[in-house]
Image (cartoon, rainbow, N blue to C red; front, side, top):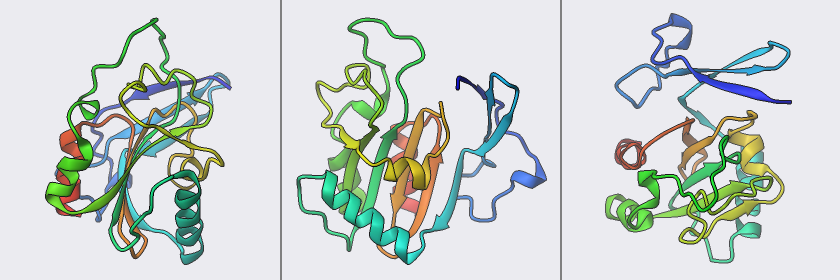
Length: 186
């Protein structure tokens, strides 16, 4: 099923207001539309808490897909890519600021954490996402996608998860400063 991604901008709809918002603006509202015309509305950012069962499943999944030890007493930060680029140009890398510099070092300067670059198992163009520099971990069982980014053709986003299961999620486009700012405030 092919979806078209359309950003509607910062809509100030009362139905989209989030009392848990950590960003000074109201959440953006994305519309994902299928060829058949079915629309799904997705808030760009929100907070919530994982159930104990989902938190334990996530920890097990991260342990299974990551070769290094994980300190689950620290926050977990995930940069997630959900799909291939809509336009593919050979040997092209997206000029996205999250790929420049050392994200782990920047995050740790705010607060020691576990940082992961995780990509949907169906993504094939890793070079576009700086696969020659970033050690992407494949979401083999789609656990990250199912729990947090379960929308087709939404590029992905980032997640900051506290040890108790509380999380902030940003869906869609974002910058390095978005991640760092939320790390400071959440």
